[in-house]
Length: 263
Image 1 (cartoon, rainbow, N blue to C red):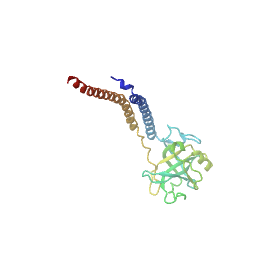
Image 2 (image 1 turned 90 degrees about the vertical axis):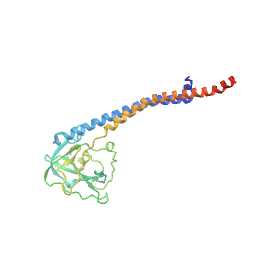
Image 3 (image 1 turned 60 degrees about the horizontal axis):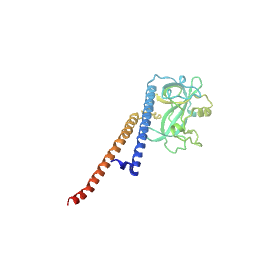
Image 4 (image 1 turned 135 degrees about the vertical axis):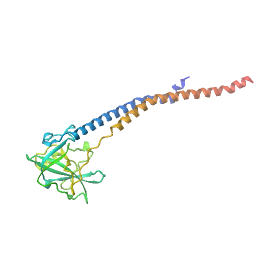
């Protein structure tokens, strides 16, 4: 009755079904891990953004590598902006997707150490080879608030660190490289300024980090596992249909013979 399952066509079809089931289960498990990772990241970001602000010196120091739990923490820094030695980061976009620069200005703290402050986005307004006109920050001693960020890397950002750029232009923010350029003790990471809020002709501040779409991964996980469950059901439905078609074909083949014998 089911000898057709030994045919070449059905052996291949059965092997494909047997391979699809564990593959889809593994894809579902991968999406589950993605869901867990994104959910954990979203929780870390939310906790950091809502934590009480602390002085940046409590979380960072020269050559310090900002950790996952420290990233996005709200920090304060008090000092004087050194606009003479600020640089711009190329090929950065604003909330509308326009390409421009981020403005990175050293803030000299009261103890002489330096923290790098990303003051926000400005448009190119011309060729990117020329150093842009940058709105000045508050003069004298000032306090800024912002999110503590880790040094940027090509691996994490996908941005290639191009060499030979025009003067005072960089591709990635790296506190150790800036420490060598400035000849100063620079705190690890940098501060993404959120306050004081921009007034008039000032850089456009960077928006809050969005939540990664963890529920979408959860939906994909369920989807792959439903596909895995559907494979044996579909295979069995094909087997039953093949058996029925063969039985009907056999019955049709014997009917004329029976009619001939009766005559």
